[in-house]
Image (cartoon, rainbow, N blue to C red; front, top):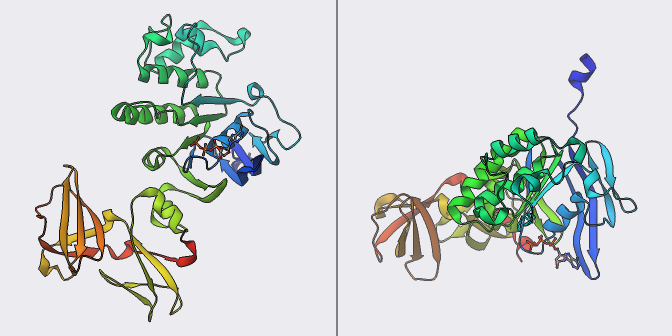
Length: 356
Ligand code: ATP
């Protein structure tokens, strides 16, 4: 028992150096990831970056050219061999849900469970868990979008999979239902304890649902880590830009600082003369009355969203524009002069070769 206590936790899913090419398109290049039971990893990235191909390789519906995939310590795929999806202990939910229209909800949920193990009590329990008790005899078209979503989740979870794969599952829902479903799905997935891989191009969804985020671009993982680590400490400008609009300034380091319209920003760790790009997120900017001590700018636009205000300002000569997101309503008027500041630890500085 003593030995067991010190044994390291095996990741439920281990992807090692996988790659997949379609003719001239290297869809996935050298991707490695591990996901532990009960953990949600989001693959986040723009259209075409290889998220779905990665997910399909884990599911067993896409071949690997290189690399290996292990589930619960067992090799399920390499470049030669591939265990079929139904033998991998994976559950899948895709954007189009793919419920069987001619089957009842109960039949849909029972579909993946081998006949010998199908028990009506289990199906009832599963319907209960997703808040659809009494819906078993209905057909998919009789359900709302959110309800169909729950059926798809229930069907994927019914076999008790070790790995759950979700590909943009909430993108067809309207905004309110989407955030409801995210919370609902997250609770359900955590309770089920599967290792979850969620594909999304929505940074808010990734921030909200993920324990770990892998940011992908052109078939590669640019950075993998806890959501706030990626947000606060992006390895390059491309990662930083995933999360929000950025205020950017180019400049050269002079005596440890970069001159910008909002003042001299410290460039720790950069050599004098280095060409750099400075970035500050709009939510880290501050605006104060002109005696605030910061650089003086002019308000060019105010958008009040209630919970926050988006205030665009420009330098007095009009050459530089900046965006500031301020919590709650603001009293500033267009053309008013204000003082602009920023949270000191929010300045991000990248060497210029990172720019694309
Ligand atoms: P999206 O968010 O649009 O789904 P994605 O990040 O999931 O994009 P993939 O679907 O993995 O990206 O596609 C990665 C690249 O591989 C794209 O350039 C795509 O056109 C290409 N690709 C994917 N599947 C195939 C295929 N079966 N045959 C040829 N090319 C493919």
